[in-house]
Image (cartoon, rainbow, N blue to C red; front, side, top):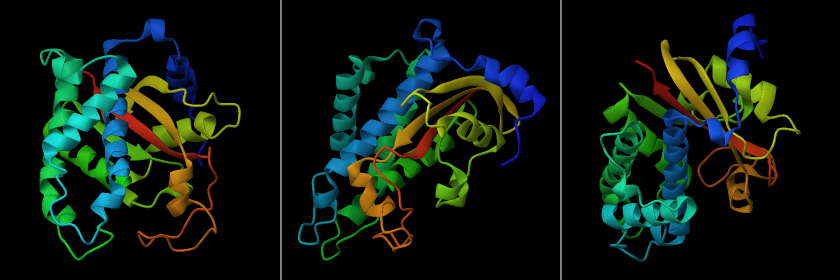
Length: 246
């Protein structure tokens, strides 16, 4: 891992904050996008057995159903109904685009999840989140991008590899044992060659993650990848959100 450069030390690290009082609209928007992405992923996780049921055709997991359940989780966690967000604000505009992306992805995968006679269909929480992020980028790449990355040794999809800034923040902070669990990092730093507000929030393996990411290390999991040998509570991924500055 390359060392932090002087510019990072002087500028970006000074911008790291955990203060909710100093939260900007960009930080509120980024945090909100992370909550909604996790909510949509949780809905897929909650319905995984049904999705993989080979004996059932139409499962009723329509775009409206998945989006409605995701919005309900979001509201339970934030106290805010996401459908009431003002679309004229940055926060509301980005969140609306993300919700539209959730609905579009769910519409696209209907033929897969409703196909009888097939068990595992590949529509797992991580894949669903990646598809949402790709669809969001199609719509909003001029304003913001979202991806789920991880420490380089845990990356399964090359497109999810951390960029230089993400790598530095993961190595210098998020993998450290004394980093406060769940604490995010915010900074002003370039993303894809453009000035941006950047937001990272760590994610940790839960018990349900270990069927694919746990032990024994190297064993091939249901998705066809070797298990990482992770343990519950280990850093497993990082939601990275960049909101471009004009």
